[in-house]
Length: 297
Image 1 (cartoon, rainbow, N blue to C red):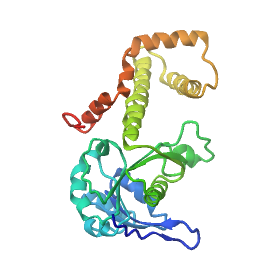
Image 2 (image 1 turned 135 degrees about the vertical axis):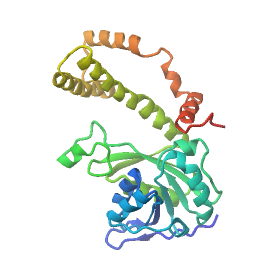
Image 3 (image 1 turned 90 degrees about the vertical axis):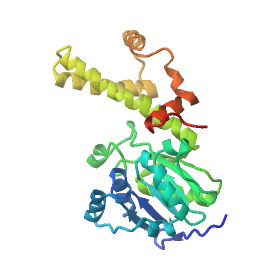
């Protein structure tokens, strides 16, 4: 494999800089990515096809570049596009990449499902933000307001790369730290493991529980007739205690609480719920998310 990576170091910091192309720069995630990259010393090209996205990019003061020009000499191409668009987008762009370039997707589903166009001399990588931890010590109003991450509150990120080349791994990490800044740690896993984390652990379980809490709040207010302010106050506070006790063991649950928890588990949770962590269930979940009949392995 030939490698024409053109990294350089900024004189003031000594940090390596790279040539980065952002595809979908005017979309929801693309704007977040671009807002952070514009603050770095990296050479960045912004690509957007939709009229609304192009206008958002221009309004943000960024110059648009056509895709062929942007990817021709890029060290890494960030695909900030929806999962369902990744197949046709990679089919168009991957053949145009230089040998040794990296394609970085921001969600593992399409990569794990094998929907991306690949080349032996182009490296596939995936990254995803962890979002600021509920246990993060926040110090400013901006950090408190940044629940998603990428603005003020520090967060970790997860990354995977299909290469043992440490130089390529360094490019991915530098890009991940830039697009999700401020980043505390980058945790390295396989693409399959990243798919097990997202969606199984965080969307299938954590996000579902968050939505369930909102439904429970609605029932408490509208079915049981509890004043909404009272219901929200006790739910918000007890959710923090429940997470702290459950995930960190801060304080033991009371005996009465344990009995109520058992009742909740018996009433709400299926006995075989842990099957979602099996490979065949992961494939079913991702097939539904990607609107596929099945995922071929």
